[in-house]
Length: 62
Image (tube, rainbow, N blue to C red; front, side):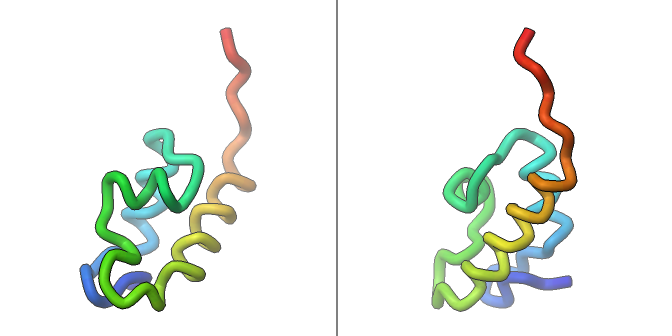
């Protein structure tokens, strides 16, 4: 599903960014242009990030 219509960013792309290590919307924005235009998608994008973080088990530091 498209989260950011202005830049055609999908929830899948946001989830992939979290899987690669993003831990906040700001982290996601450093690799994807989500929320960089009108800003209407920021709440939905943050929700996707938070949902993905809750579903992902934390790795212990070794």
